[in-house]
Image (tube, rainbow, N blue to C red; front, side, top):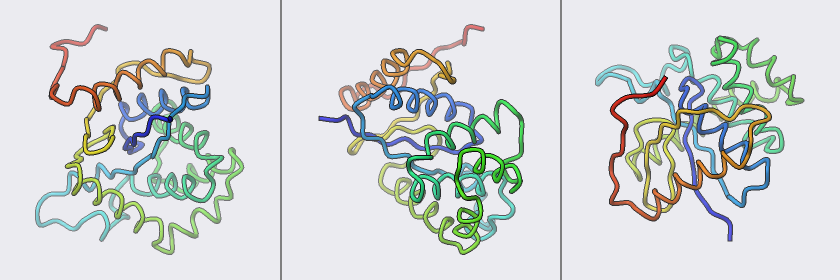
Length: 202
């Protein structure tokens, strides 16, 4: 029976990139997992009380456009999602590109054979933003999610920082082991609330 879990993302977070690279690498190698990729807006999470939400003023947030594009690809072009998902993280963190720039997103989508026009049509109609908002708010309400990457299984949720990456060509065994350890702790040892090194080796 496949292991089922969900994991949140916002393309701006380097730790989300690390975790999602491991998940994508393991899945590509045949990991027996059913994974739900969940959008979470870091911009919305940091809106000050009394200020307009990202849902009201998406043009003011630098991450919401790419998040919408990722959700559209996830739902409408699922076979292309792993490559696009990885590439959007790479565009932000390896190439230093601005994901609020439509031409950057168009380049990533086109490179991976996703019709950018169809993606932007769903964004411009408000459909994609409504989907992002619904999923973001659902898991904030049900699991008190406050950041990325958060792993979710059943009624348990945990924020995780994996320090190493799993780029193209990485050993999938390392990724499988890393993610299975996370999920095992999440589902098998919920009594462990916090485990954080006091320093990070460089």
